Image (cartoon, rainbow, N blue to C red; front, side, top):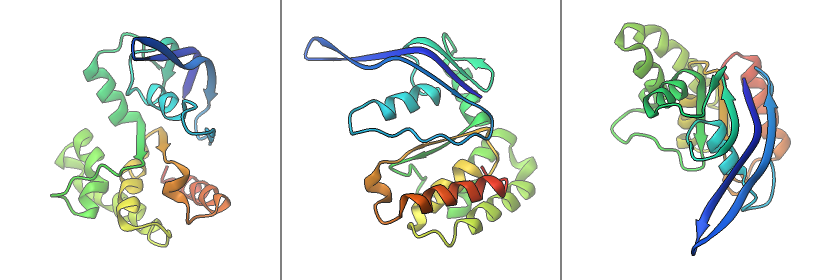
Length: 185
């Protein structure tokens, strides 16, 4: 599912190179749940950007859903993300002109077109309803539903502790496991 070998990433700041990832190795199997934790600035988001095929400027080997990311064209990266990766960001990135349900359905509509509208709508409603008892606000539920409703093979979350401050960590983990068991992520 996700395999990183010797992944290194650095940023330039005031003319000097600042290493962020230093030879990271990570392997995540299908349906395995992994938490990446660490202090602010430790490279968690950078690691998730590499593993999510959002960042192509890194050294080392990264393979997601059997696809090597090195040298992958922008269009192929976008296709991989649409087919295989569900994203939930700290900021929800929802489209204003769409309803909650349409935001949840969007990845599937982009992938399958209007032909699958009925099946996508049913799956999106199920994902959205499953999260209805969540303690978070509606925007977060819609973003979660959009990331998980069409069973992308990999769900990638980039959520700081501040974004989940009102939820106990064990509840967050239990919620993710329940969604996985329900076949929604």
